[in-house]
Amino acid sequence: MAIQRPKGTQDLLPGTIEQWQYLEETIRSVCREYGYEEIRTPMFEATELFQRGVGQTTDIVKKEMYTFQDKGDRSMTLRPEMTASVCRAYVEDKLYGQPQPMKLYYIGPMFRYERPQSGRFRQFHQFGIEVLGADQPIVDAEVISLVWNLYKRLGLIGLEVHVNSVGCPICRARHREQLQEFLAARKSKLCNDCQERFERNPLRILDCKNPSCQEETVGAPTTKDTLCEDCSTHFEKVLAILGRAGVVYRVNPRLVRGLDYYTKTAFEVMVEEIGAQSAICGGGRYDKLVEEIGGPPTPGIGFAMGIERVLAALQVQHKLPEEKPKLFAMLIALGEQAQIEGFALLSDLRSQGMPVGMDLLGRSLKNQLKSANRQGVRYALILGEEELARKVLVIRDLTLGEQMEVSLVDAVEEINKKYQRGV
Ligand code: ATP
Ligand code: MG
Image (tube, helix red, strand yellow):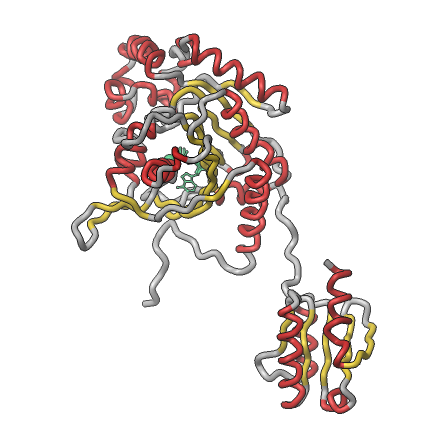
């Protein structure tokens, strides 16, 4: 039997990959405009990094990691997310010694052992940014506005930006108490996971996707009610900056995010149209994380966006660019000598940046023209024995059905003129 790709993974083939390239290019230009630089870290890390950096109580660490012993008997894990890796690099590569803040972005594959379904893969891709070394509310606003402006650039509509503040360890302790008090009588009605969370991390009960848990937590005290003055002022400032910048958001007091290291601002972006997995982006501030993994106390904030889900949203909203022909011209060389000359001509055209091709299958003239038409190529460059003898080339415009003859020495220049006009 033929070998198949692992469950929950995808082959990205020509025809689809153009959509990925378009999205990645748009992301890169927006990051450039905001002054973010790219970082690439290893696809696998010491398991302990994620245990500490993502948190032992999270679904990611408890259920979803691809962990293995390598031949040196070290426990390694395919990265399930990249914030922990970026923070590790910040400490290990002493990025705190450079002018602050560090404004970084990444695009790459992540791995989680989940039940594959629409919008949920085992190898999926994220675009994310991290700002390290800055704690001002304006930073939170910049991060959220970058996402907002990226979606605007892509033409997506109907997005919901939810924001909340989960506070700091000081005000969260008060919230934790109030929440446990509220939930104590309802504990038996919560799912098994939430019963376990009750002691270890009751905040995350608010985040549970189980409908009965959601019902039991209606009216529960929210983090927003217990924010300390510092956290509350911070949150108000973030909202004021966002409002003036035209970012449409909704304060969602139930938004707590799944990870343990988040402090203050948390946010999520949703698009209903892509089905049950409607979250396309999640992020927030994590002022305790760098310290947690052994670095100097350093504030941080970032988000991660699911590339597959954004592509799904672009697809349903018909916002993906139309497929364009890949080649600008096809050489049609007839006879062995013409093929040799034509091949050299193609090299010259390619070295000047023109995407051009020729028949590689020994097809007849008729079939070469047919294939050029099928590929949507604008020009056929015809070089037969007779043209070769007269040192000319026929340039046929396949769209207009016109043709002209140019001398071979001028061919590159003539074709380039047409190319420049077309681009
Ligand atoms: P979810 O609630 O959907 O499980 P999450 O809280 O696990 O999301 P994060 O860890 O915040 O997600 O990751 C950020 C984004 O990455 C999500 O908003 C989503 O768009 C995307 N994402 C997460 N897990 C997957 C997956 N298994 N397949 C595809 N995209 C994913
Ligand atoms: Mg998840």
